[in-house]
Length: 473
Image 1 (cartoon, rainbow, N blue to C red):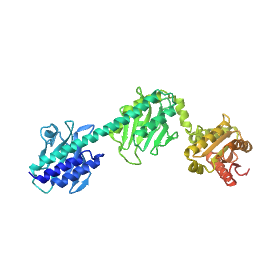
Image 2 (image 1 turned 90 degrees about the horizontal axis):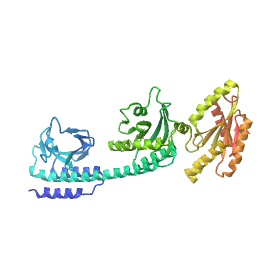
Image 3 (image 1 turned 45 degrees about the horizontal axis):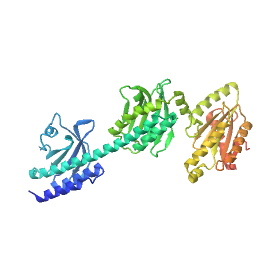
Image 4 (image 1 turned 90 degrees about the vertical axis):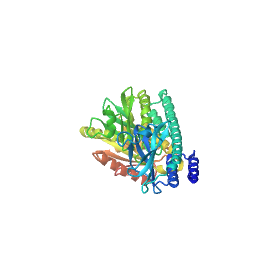
């Protein structure tokens, strides 16, 4: 008996005991230890996939001292079939001479073969059979440690699922609005999964459109995605439409880094959950997909209990932070107003408003304070218009106001009223620019450009100023 091999085997087995928290480190140690101890030129570890137990896929290998990864699979059914005795538990190992002299040993979990270890000698035609029993001990220890790792991971995943289920159960009995529910659902997924991005879309069966609701990004920030609207009757449909239009494909995965899953409530499609890792390129695993599928019906029910598709359209047209209209909605409506004003020879005002030194407020007092200023300004602008007027958050700290049948003097008085109300807000100062249809332009781009130029003229003149294009106030 080779005493050195026996001692090295015992040391290997002890060293693997409960010392590796991740599977990669465990496999690296095993491969390096077997390579150094038993004299094989190439050692490889194969494992099965959860959904397929008839094939073994290469997980990791060592060749002449170098740890490698690659693509290889072996089957224990059909040809060559020599692994069947291992899978059936009839043998502890089998020899092979094709293409190299070597042997296979099973990795087991609860009596079931879940992987294989292959050890080969690429330049030798001799295997010391006395040492095979020692190698078997090391392989068995690897099986035990891998089982512990997977068991621990299963418990972690179960805890994640339990956390999400508990939160969803709370949402189901809550009186939250649709927007709040979607926000909470995204937060629950963010907390338990490390996806780069999570999006929820709502499907309106009546008008065959998919409306973007909300997005949770890799910075754990929740954003409104009201600009993402897809007409499912149009040509060139996005991938998102597949899980709605194809009854046999309620889950669609692309390149293992993006997944779309239909949200259903009693077989009714009410939306789509999209998750992706397009930035990190981290693989979205089958297990993660299964987890998401398992509670999408609960998500669907939670949303369906509160949803009103009139509300969906309102959400798509409303900025989630400030409550005023979105840029997309504003432009669509303004195109209509230009057509109407042209036909009836009417006029109107466009006002571009920007918060002065907004970045300084964010940097000094934090984004929550900046958000508060945006909401306060939006409220003042909205409270001081008529039903026929429109206020939108155009982007960042910029707002645009449409005032129907309003000339430059009336528009200036509107801003003067806002400036007067803003005196109570120490940190909120604005600059505004005005353009008039048709005097300063006959389409949105031209009107916006002229009002924007006037707004920058106001900034140069100092805080809390308003300028009509081509005329300094």
